[in-house]
Image (cartoon, rainbow, N blue to C red):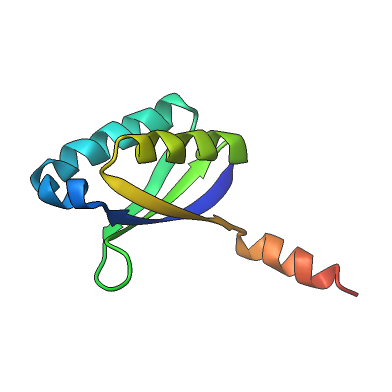
Amino acid sequence: MTTYIVLINWTEQGAKNVRDSPKRLDAAKKLLGDMGGTFKAFYLTMGECDMVAVVEAPDDAVLARFALILAAGGNVKTRTLKAFPEFAYREIIASLG
């Protein structure tokens, strides 16, 4: 499984319906689970992003479909970062020679 950091901001629509946000989070967790992925962590944040999720998905295409489905709902905008665990980071750096 590949790990991704998803930076999330409410749209104007999402902010107006913020009280429904926990239900939307539950639906997003189910959707990703049905796609073979999982939420590893979720945070409400202060600052540049409204929320941050750490998720795992089988591949980039699955995560792209997931993000597009979220965007189509109109409540959030996302930015996704592919995350490399420490062992992969060390391998990548070591391969530089």
